[in-house]
Image 1 (spheres, rainbow, N blue to C red):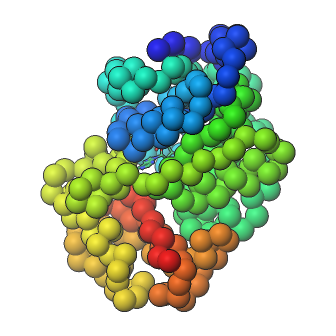
Image 2 (image 1 turned 180 degrees about the vertical axis):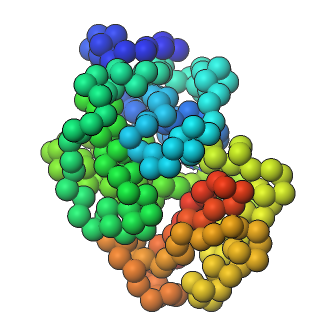
Image 3 (image 1 turned 90 degrees about the vertical axis):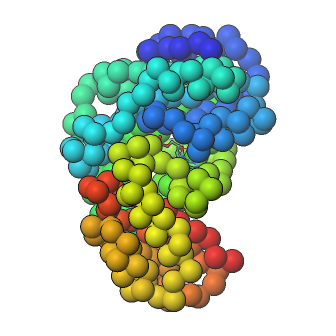
Length: 266
Ligand code: AMP
């Protein structure tokens, strides 16, 4: 596996590579969810590029940014084992050469006001900036992202429209532990007991109401709930609980760690 620290070196290498490129952007602390994206990219493309970059502009909470897990050595091992061809591991200055003020603004409309948008101001603008810049550097045919971050997929799809991009966005299913808990890099910050309590998210998807779901989360040990919502899967606008088809989405804190998950009900 080739490793590049700068976009300049990455671009020079990719120019000579030929064939289709599949791209998997990540923030590292890789788990089987990330590796499933790499595997799908390998099946569908000639060359797979993964980026590992904890993007400061998408963190609205400084503590979350500081405590974000970093496991680069083991990440590089896992990517090599998976047969990933190229990894790009930039410093902040390589993606933000003129600093992090006065960044471009993407007109995301309602997507930025709903759910995560309401609770994490600026988060999706930061996601758009970094993904847009990464796409400029990698110039992939396909972009692979996980449905675990359901709203992020909708936002990036919108960003691709705004920028008139030809990149194909491939949304991949959420990988879960056998227990049902969605894999997340942030899970490493939870104790064994908290991980067990966090199962209430997965188990709550069959709740009879949003209020019952929230009550179950709190009773199970969650500190607070940002939202439990039943939404239109395309627009993410709220709809009455239980009306099908719908996407159930949840964000809640346990042990100071914010977890998100979602489930499609046909
Ligand atoms: P992150 O490193 O958290 O920014 O995630 C990088 C990519 O992996 C994003 O497209 C995520 O949606 C995806 N991802 C994270 N967790 C999972 C999971 N449990 N299953 C599938 N994809 C995931």
